[in-house]
Image: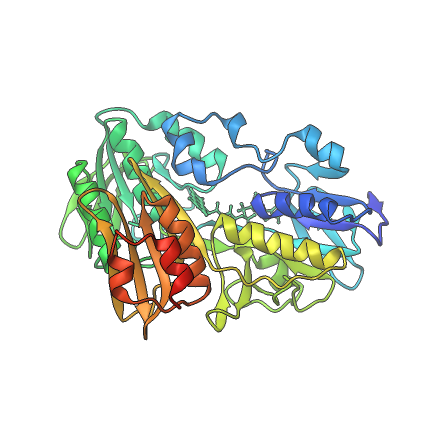
Length: 419
Ligand code: FAD
């Protein structure tokens, strides 16, 4: 049994966006001690967003996704071990146990375990074995095979009309597949945006030749007699023949390690504004954590790169002795066809919608107001306005609706003068 003692060592579980940023910020903040990062995937930390965009379309090779090179981690003095899954945390002994044997001691521990694709739970998939042509999209190991299978003329059924599903639909249409998107809720992107944007994207995909079905919950997956291949997807009203199926039905945070060592967990590892968990020596960052938002006066578990980076920096600052509370305004982006969607804030609860620019021109920004205050905005192909919107949402600014809609008044100066 290998066991190393390292009471001043920081051990990071997970090697994704949050972990990589944390390690850099830790060194940037002057932390001199040993740092060990343990990731279960076979790769160094890489960017996940391109998996449903440029990597899937073949525009970005695997090498382009890496966040830092092996040499960069070495230079920083950060030991990264890949294919190293952590099986348990022993808080009393302050050590973690690796799945393939061995223990590592920690002074402080950081959970950056992200999440995993939510498996489909429908009739026809009771077998433990997944049909070979049913795919999920969370890792490079998932995305590589899907990329190879996007061949012209194949019938792709996408289950789930969220970002991942719609981004894959856009790539697949460009590659000449027949695409059907099945969404159980009454509209696309229902979990993350308001009805106006859902309607816009439904139109865009429809015009690109995607068959969109809303209120179309999947009832059954029909496989061939061996159970190896899906041949059709059944909804209440339809049977859709499929050569290839992609399920994008959400994510489950990887919190089992935290639960088993009795950390507070509630839709993510519960942390404070410094990314500290219920154990002062354990931090949690990124998709696996649930943090307080002073702006929205509630707890949030976000699944986005900006959140992973922000929480990682907050944890590093605390561990470097200069704590800075994390309370960033949530934001996110999505690329579909020639459209860059950038979203800031949470629109839930809005009572008024103001749009600047035109949906027909495929360049507009929609503001969501609650009691006169701007709580969120969705920008399509409007990067400059989006920057201004980020500030407005952060301030929960009040701006006369006419000014917001009026393209002759630059948003930047409007933002400065009216509050
Ligand atoms: P992850 O990146 O998931 O990293 C966690 C790592 O920890 C994983 O490698 C995991 O294998 C590892 N791990 C888990 N458990 C263990 C264990 N026990 N031992 C060792 N290692 C472990 N966000 C955006 O902002 N914009 C986008 O456009 C966007 N597009 C996306 C497209 C796709 C297809 C996907 C899947 C995600 C997308 N996201 C996007 C979300 C974004 O990628 C995540 O929010 C971000 O990666 C979160 O970083 P993280 O470090 O918290 O988790």
